[in-house]
Amino acid sequence: MTETWRRKLYREIPKVDDFLELEVVRRTLEGHPRWVVMGTVREVLEARRAAIAALSSPDDASPFGPPLQEEEFLARLSSRSLPHLMPLINATGIIVHTNLGRSSLPPAALEHSLSIGGRYSNLEYDVGEGRRGSRQDHVTDLLCALTGAEAALAVNNNAAAVLLCLETLASGREVIVSRGQLVEIGGAFRIPDVMEKSGAVLREVGTTNKTHLADYRDAIGTETALLLKVHTSNFQVVGFTAAVETVDLAALGREHSLPVMEDLGSGCLIDLSPYGLHGEPTVQSVVADGADIVTFSGDKLLGGPQAGLIVGRRDLLELVRRNPLHRAVRLDKVTLASLEATLRLYFEGDRALAKIPTLRMISEPVKSVRLRAGRLHRRLSPECRRLLKAAVVSSAAQVGGGSLPLQQIPSAALSLGSAGYRAHDLEESLRKCSPPVIGRVHEGRLLLDMRTVENGEVPALAASIQGLIPA
Image (cartoon, rainbow, N blue to C red; front, side, top):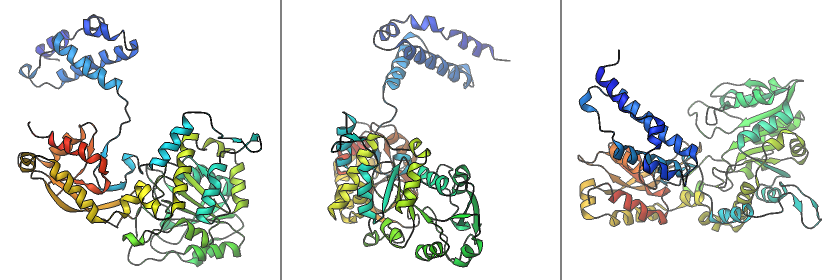
């Protein structure tokens, strides 16, 4: 039975109609929709009920008179009025951070998106011919020129690209894939599940750690429609392992007149080995090795917007294009504009490394990152540095986005944490700043990795850190 004191507190909570009679609430109805104000009022009252339910004794109850009611109402109304999606500072050192929006877009991509999104455009209109055109035309030639493929398509993400290709080429028939490549590609989306939705029949071959060309050859039958290879970009099996190279699988496919499809996932268009990262195949190399269809993402190592890109043989891509499902997963005009602008940057050679944020963060020398960390450190007051025990330390960044999971990039970070300012408390406080700052706690210290912090973000980051201590 509810305690007498708790029942008394519940009775003190005003009714919705009484709350609406508060002067400050009535004034807000002049500038806000009634449903917003009503929703905020109910939030305030529900929060009070929850607070009472959590009390262990009446002595813990906080006052809830009109001044405090109004204060909480205004705070919650202000929060409701702000956009929910907001920019933040990524100080985790994870460059392609799935939870933080993956790749940051190049300025050229943002400018082109704004130009196209804010007015009419030739999205599906051939200006030269004066007739209907295809939205795919804006990126097809660019993708073919960059990858060496005969044809190309762009859809809304790589999972859709894989689904569309499988449904087109193998619905109701078998797709042969190595057991060691039946990966989960994020958000609990798994290759077997995608294949099942496409209507294709999964035919596993080999073992988790070893699959040989003979395993594929022995599995080929009258119901086989496709040979599929999936790049295991988000994990690695090491030790006693064997996998079939694309060039060998492509030769087997040609021998049996079967198309070979490879899901690359990350969509790397440049060789990353000069920056100490090895084992990530480029789209160009896979096309050159004979894969008939290659699928990959636009917002990972490519450094553009979310998109699923399909390149390969013209006859197969034409079948995919004609699939009615293609319309359901097509790109909108703003994303197409962003993708087009990003792809064009790759034709500028080495300058693309500086103009595409993802590539810039991967390739930036560690000395430059350390200098940025030093600038952040110097912006803090001596008292702040002392209380937080702030220091510039060596760190290890990662590509992220399911790419090169075992490889680290030398980096530098600002390390924070002391007896009076514990790392976990600092991490929580910085998350609540405006803009929020996301770092990582490592061995009792809060690390703010500067490889993923832009030069222009240093002043705001310093101000947020400075605000952690009393003025």
